[in-house]
Amino acid sequence: PYADWRFGEGYAHDIIGDLNNGAGGWLDWNLLVDDKGGPNHVGNTCDAAIVFANGEVQVHPQYYFIGHFSKWLPPGSKSLGIEVKPDRKYEASKPAGPYGTCTGEGGLEATAVKR
Image (cartoon, rainbow, N blue to C red; front, side):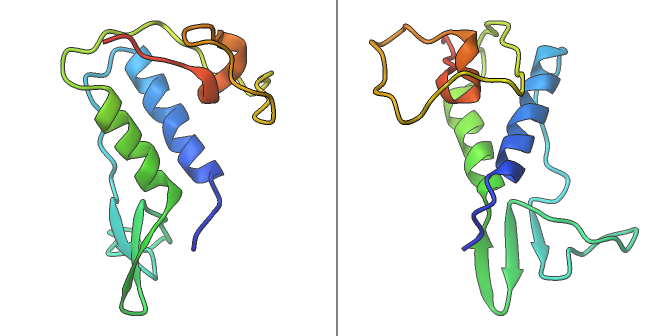
């Protein structure tokens, strides 16, 4: 299993940044690659949300982040103007607060979208 969630978090950061700057959608250039990072028109190694290697499909964290945005941001959704910062105060070990009480200090783990 591929468990480096930083790659998925990087996708989320890029998607949120693009949407906050007026993008109407987001497209992943390489959703599926082979174990050599291709096919690729420039010959460099690429990672992707899905990798086919040794006869099996490997689903990477990016896949789940793309799925989350696809599920929870249907057409017609409105932006709440969130900002992603590296210095978050969210602590996963603490119990969750009452519904609707998250703030921007929580980072990606505690944000919500109004539909």
